[in-house]
Length: 166
Image (tube, rainbow, N blue to C red; front, side, top):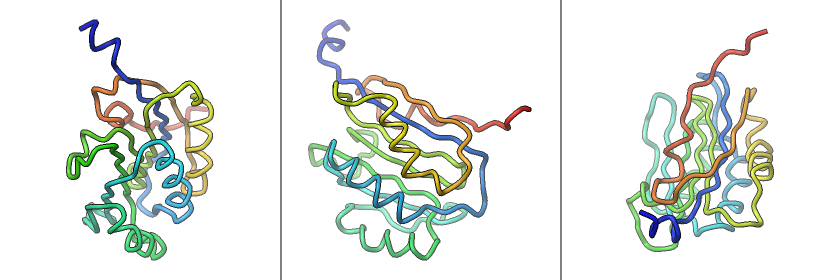
């Protein structure tokens, strides 16, 4: 086990949470902000996106779906976008993603995670995610954390949004 700890990469993650919404949609601004940011860390290979009620709109190679994704986002029909990045060609294996980003407007959740490097800070990644996502809903709180690269980037961030107590 100690051998793995010596070679293990850490994944730096940020997540935002808000009350669920039936009317919020993914935005062109989010795509245009997150895609180059994520791609600068690990090559963006895969994309999956859905409309309201879980209607599947597209899944496959990001380069093959990018134009259709943007078109669907502009038409306000997309509520969930998942982007997966790999250095290797592990297509179809989203759990082996080395970096990922997700926006889910039905559950009001946004996420980005990528391999940690000393140049990256927890505050910077959270501010970037908030900047890309702030126009989508009234985000209630955000978190940053690191975890083992032996787990997919997004697996530990899904939580439940709560009501503000005054």
